[in-house]
Image (spheres, rainbow, N blue to C red):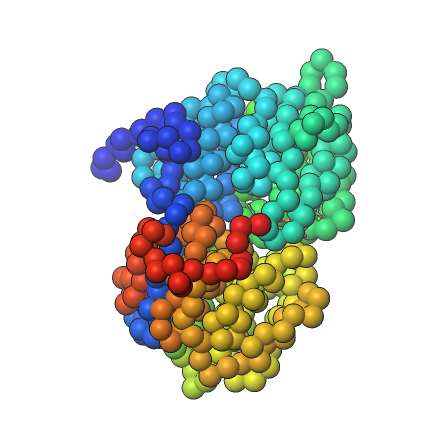
Length: 464
Ligand code: UD1
């Protein structure tokens, strides 16, 4: 019989000596990468960050204790746990497992200092409103990859019967009437927003009657959240298609649920293999979640094989062929893989065009790739990439999480040393990044910024 895990209560705030998650300290550090080392072996994949974040928010729907497994140890997860603690929930942790006891929700207001740093924490507005009939959540604000509004979340909640107004930057939502119950409705999303689909699906689980979300997001993380809610007793059909039907139930019950593997982390390491012309395996991951990326990797000439135990093997072709890519909502090519795939195309034989259609400001890494010797021109939402024979190591700064990962894997293929700054982005979304890469032969290390040769520090690409 398996031993009973020792759970540790999370009571601290980020920055305190007992900070809950993660273990990595990213501020004032850099990663130095010496390129040119071939990789070989297996890279393990953690639980999906974007699923884990929203599933943790979803625990608010249940007045019993839910156990969630395969939670990655990341800064963003720590922040989401902080939000739950601030709302009065009890959170216990043992390794990658969290127990969340939402029997008592003492506050309906999420704290500004965390919501402003973690957009996904805004998504608690749906479960809070469904559970308490009232929610107050600060607007998440702008971020490095675009304005990222929440109008679709709010319009959907209004369709479910909530009154919503803005006051001093805080979204106040409440359900009028003594019972404080949302009412099922037909909601058409102007755009298949992942966050709006998740907010509304969670809110509808406890609403009276049936809700239909049309033009819903179809991302695997939406399906994971639906499966978590179904495991708690929710009635949801159609998750993974563009129409989700939710029949409200009076209450949800405890469950024990495991988060799916992170398709974006897996994809990042597969591209690292292709970039360094190495043969590696990556997993576990559901290959069907990576269909567009695997198709594009094959188009560039990489050999991609699906193995047993949910592993994917990548091995190099003769050359890297140029390809065009356009980001789209799932099942299109993911915006969260755009920067990493662009890193690969910088070394392609010929010209490629990458078009970003999901976010309006997500090509800021182009300037940093060019600093490494890439030849990329920006034309609106398009990056025109002329393949070069090699990249050169340079000091660089990622403008967001995926841009940081892309620059790091570009550094693995570059000649000489790359110094990656701004690690607070990377630590938001990649668990044990350096360790996982070192284990397959990469040469990289994290050092304090104070130990970096000042002449090698970057002059652009600072925090925005
Ligand atoms: C989620 C993911 C993020 C991924 C993105 C797109 C999480 C925690 N994050 O973000 O990693 O890059 O999906 O796959 O799951 N929009 C509106 N109005 C709204 C909501 C969104 O105009 O009310 C727009 C956004 O500005 C953006 C587009 O819709 O241009 C897609 O955003 P959305 O799908 O909502 O992304 P997130 O849920 O924020």
